[in-house]
Image (cartoon, rainbow over the protein chains, first blue to last red):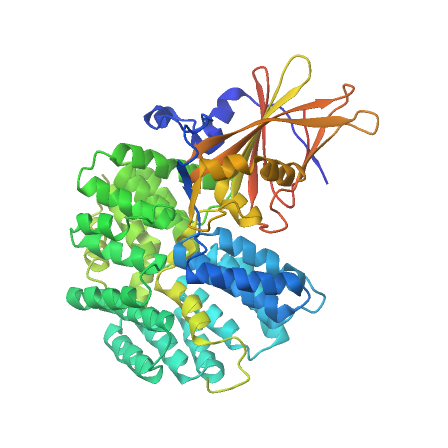
Length: 410
Length: 175
């Protein structure tokens, strides 16, 4: 089917900011964007790409060759797709989710799709925050295999991210049944950190770590990351720091951990360390946002240019119709564009789809800054129901409740 | 694993999936595959095109970084111009009906910087016989990355038309 285009006014397209977001009033602050040129020297490095000297990249090459020589072999396809997803997550690059999707597409669209392919497709969609679509694929996976451990783990993750803790509790029970006790403990431990039982969470995660003794580096990093987050709930900052450091010792390049640790450092007033930590990770949008926040904190001369680049990246995502970055965009609007009304709008949209502690926090911060305490009501109600402990979020919530009770209309 | 039958729930994969619980930063990878296709029609009906394709995407598809060190140089891109053009133009078709043959003429290849990195900027002209309406069909990267999108902008004088080209929306009729 083809679509017939029609002309529209130039003014509207200006807002679309074609070619790298070159439109907009700030374009002049980054000369060179949207202006093609011929580099002066052959030796000029113009783009960093994954180096084949990296073991993970080598592994993908091997798996890709195996899959290319046997494209009908589902295990070769799944092996390659999983490697893509893992690598994309590690370096913070969503391209690899797309590559994985292409590799498993023949099985996902098969008349009788196997559960393993459906679960991987659900994982990719979850990665893109297409939660409803991810749930559809999980439902199909359970139809094919009701005892699929990976499907239960993925559903538990989805339910926790979306704040359905009752459902997550049931999912964790199934994880224990089908994936084993250690992962069940980790699932339940993770869950308890969101419902006011962070001490229990710590105990369960320790048990999980003991049961998984001798586990691989990514698994150790994952558990250390969960423990760091639980320590954040309790405000035990030295434990948070040592857990993140443990995790990063195991997987030093993990984008997720780097970003979470950077947030911790920003909260603790250590922006200079963020700039050191994230050097070389500018390609990842989530890491780049933390770099820009740190630049703002140290009044860096690069700040204006970085803010422009960050805005252009968000524009590029908006142009293609992706809207899964609400949390980051709200922080960007509030902290770097100083636009609390827009930050609040983005935080509220984000809250409709995800409800992790950071999602609550950006909403509360935006509501306070925008002087619209009532707008935070959905998050305040959620926090009351779930009893989330958090030394940063609780005072924000208290402040908003006081304003609402005092009938503050600013 | 307590049950040997539990498929694919090995620890590293589980770690990946459960990491999302921490707060969904996993989804924050963001950097996605976009290309930018701009066509400007002149008074004689020739379309002047600029097609910006991310070098990271091209490297994945046709392996531009020959020494594998991860630092793509202008020399590596320049020497691969023919391969890049052979690959890319296979996935861009213009059609103005059976009697109105369209020809793409590659002109030059430059570099364009976008917020997420450097792009190869492919400059080309499109000439179609006759004055029938032109249909554009775009399929770059869709087979290897269905999440790839091309942001299309067409200009004729002061008029502008835009579209987002996607696997489900790969053909557009130019106004």
